[in-house]
Image: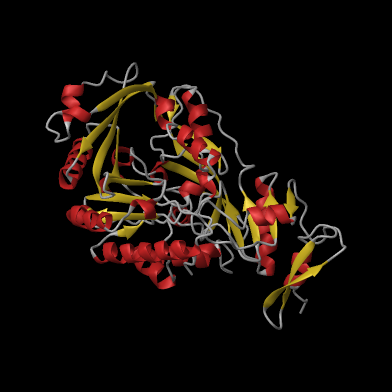
Length: 488
């Protein structure tokens, strides 16, 4: 029988001349640092480039969470989709783990890989074409939602749903779900995809959709990268407003706040509904702001304040309204993010907690979790709390409570990364919060930092787990993709 090339040989091919390499010892089954004077050898022909320099490896051994650090041995910056096919086949042949990376906005090492290959998808940023009357747009996985919005708005069109932060990659959010304030009407971002182009773990380039390779399509959307790497997506488009009216409605009672949010999403009064929880002067998180947006003229009727706010129980003296351009509203976090980066806070640890609470017990659960929260543990972060309708969500792997209305509770903590004791304590608090919510029928929205093992993931996916496991076995039979999730 022909001899299979060793992982040492394969990974030496990932090293530039004179660079440090990590070799695999088949006897100790461990990685060992070596050096080589060989030029790149053994790699497939590429349009892009493979990097093993310290700066590249260090950068991709980190993410927005700044908590987990898994160091790859190489980074692919593809010049084409062909490069991803070729390198996944190469890594599949040699048993090298692979993780795609978009904007690196994960919070717990989900897109990192220890001793493997990181594939940066940012070069895959094509958008279009888009024209008047288009109902879809096909984009590269590395395109940012801000770029997609600007390109489609030039033709009076928009994707139906956005997350609050626009500088995320399309491939990244489609691997998780993509929930935002429009989700109650329009579904999550994964619910607005008509076709995907993916590279499977076996290195096959496949187009999949609800009618073609449906099993793969459903396993990739919100599938956390376990079966294939998204390299392109066809997104649904709808007519875009040019203007919006933005409302901030203050509340001092949690149940009234939640009930009014539920009323608004069930009646469909607003195109966007979210909410925030803030601390009072004594540090108690018992101040609530309902955030709502109505699309405006010329594409939509002028918002009628009296009709839109009728019957709500907010404090009318504290209402704030503003009229904005649609893109200005979508990109409203940009100034705040720039300020965080300027202050160095973007480089802080982000042990985020993201849970979906069942509507029937949302008030009780939220009150319990917020009672334990302190301003010091939140840091310069925010707490979001808002509803989504189950009937608008159609992607099987986006797991939500068995309740017509769920509430996303996002405790977006920020804390110094060198205070590891605090980080560990907050991770433990996240796990305790998850256990409480899970016992009441809630679920984990997997963009945050909740310690999970394979058994937790099996329970998380519930009846959808078998579908994901079958697709994993079919499309990534050697299990090389995205080990940082810890699902299998």
